[in-house]
Length: 365
Image (cartoon, rainbow, N blue to C red):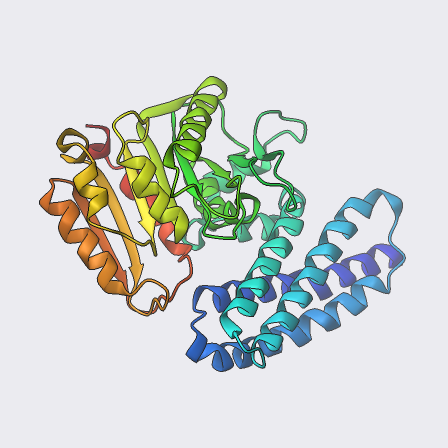
């Protein structure tokens, strides 16, 4: 009994601070704007200290062999989280702090990925991977808890998409998926990004709302903006792949992305020969030629959810305002979200908003 108490105490010493630290790191990434970086780093330092103390206690225990997968996942997540904190600190003294902060955000994603297997073991961790407003949804939590551990074709999967590979993809299918018709999202990372990381910008929303997400990785450092057919054809093949394996709603197939990924969602999504029914570019570049090159039939009534930060330092917000006007003039149905506190980062809270928009009855017309 005493041994069990020690294991419980060690788990309690680390898991709650780890979840709090991941939330703090996530918030630092969401609100990262170079001028505000010192304030953001100062705000998350207490969580760094709590995480380090919890990890020391957790690692002081002699864990039994049958709990080793749990121990490994929690430890990897905590170590990556501490590396993310350190990287945010390093950004303060870096000549180009934004790019070091982006590296910290990548380490945060690795910490979040490492912990995900524990969602099937501990209810508080499972709730962490839901949208905040869904964490008290008893029916959803029960469905997740009832999933068999050996259920195939669901959960997080990767195809040639390790962090050092390019040209592969990651896919998330909600664990409770049972063959019903669901929307599909293809989520495109930004320049120098990776699908294995960017899928976490959508996983909470997809897990909460029963949607399949595929996050491909560009073959090169970014999407083939100068040779659109190269990546556009691959995106269409991924839609076909999803349709072969799951029951995809043909009226709700969304192409969205961040930065270069958002720009490429315009480039690929405005073509006539595409399966995408909706577009959701975020923090994207835009040129009116994108509209003039598209057919009037493709643009008329095309649903587009356009997201851009008022603080964006890479693509100023006027770019998005120009896009909104040009697309609306051409007949597209544009929802425009100009986010006052957003710089050049992806606002994860908008994934659920976009999914709610995608699932509206009018979306199927």
